[in-house]
Image 1 (tube, one colour):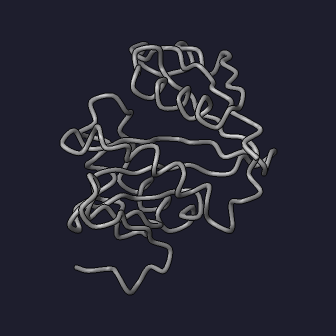
Image 2 (cartoon, helix red, strand yellow):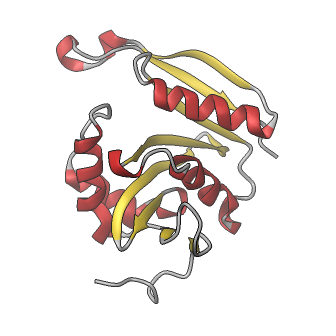
Length: 179
């Protein structure tokens, strides 16, 4: 199914570039299953219910994005505005398919959401990251460095808060102000 005319908020890489054919856009509920599969295949992210990803695509798509190559989902970012701090974008999950890594897609997803007109007032990005998720740590630290803004790291969610006792502590990364 082609969605090119359905979504107005898209960006495509120039032809012939390393990312030729890359398309980043707002998700909708039809993207929920594809995002769920990317999470499941990531090997590092907590897999939530498929319903959760359907809801994010339908109700929170202003702060989410999906990346496609040739119509196939290869990456996504999900997040929301913190209810008590509307100037803060909490990035809940971000992942890129193993075959599409090394092309800067995760960074492009972050930039895409921030560049949308409805998000230009965002001042901070927050994310919780486990100590073993070095890719995400590198992404967010690099984002802060490249924008020449501060990245504070603090305690996020302690492991004992998670059921089953098999989850690492989550560190809170707070980046900004970004503008």
